[in-house]
Image 1 (tube, helix red, strand yellow):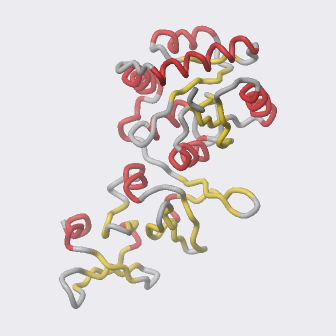
Image 2: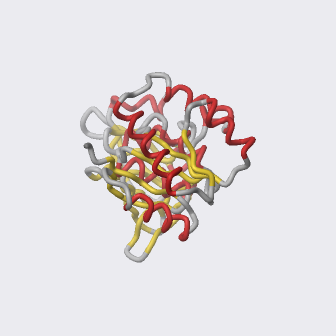
Length: 251
């Protein structure tokens, strides 16, 4: 039996405790992480790439539907929604073949939902992802043009929220991206290509394979001694721009 790597997302500590205990009682599942809000969920999903997601619907930051909207092109695990929504709203889940747990749930119902999730992973339904995204598009109409407005980054003693508007530039660092702001640097577990898809292209421009800038922070662009360019920010920071990406800023 394949061990399914599972991520729990819920803003209520008691709810996470319950999900954690229920998961531990079933064979074949490994808890790889927990998240407490929408931004933290997106970062954890992209970084940990779980097989299974136990996802609350109502959370701070943005809700579970928007979490799916933001990860849909990056990593879409099997999803069991955990919801306190009324039964009328839950009919949508049945129609779109997405499983859910209605709080409070019985142990038998939890086991049934996870069995169904395992079956869907072992025998994939090619139309299931499309049905899920149809549900998300109905609930989050702006799914096609939704961009992040903040990042949740881990620090020594907790988490920090970094507003997108405060970012000067991004730089890749292995499996992480460095977020550079006036107050310092923060690490985000994400690749540059994954990050680029979450940002409004009218505000951010890729200038190199390893870097991206917020356009409003650019003060000057000048040729360098080779065939590329130097992008100068208002802060005085200078970044190389390759010819491959010149049209992002010089179009």
